[in-house]
Length: 171
Image (cartoon, rainbow, N blue to C red):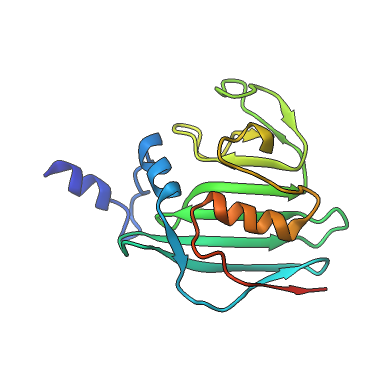
């Protein structure tokens, strides 16, 4: 049918992929998923570190990417992110880093500036441009926002990653 040809646009790199509807994004986020490689995730307490790891939905139909980023400057950014369809940011937790200002037409806290920690979840027509305070995000339970390791586990749990992998701490 016609919808098949639409959803395959962009796989050859010529056209951008179709934006997701809210229902599609929610379904991708809630889909049980597991890391393809069972090796522990690296967690750096202080040193710059950046990597991505692949996940697969339990039904093996969808691939996801998890991004870990610990920045270089002294108030170094610490960011966890889950992407679907290679490019679509489904969820991102910014623990340290710059504040984010929501667009003036945002359905949530329009025009408001949110310091870290804040949370981005895919919103139809806005992609990842809207931030929320973690307490405002349904289903997100951060045990201790000051503990980056706990937040990593809590973020993965929010993204329906199962099992939560071992996490290896470095300096």
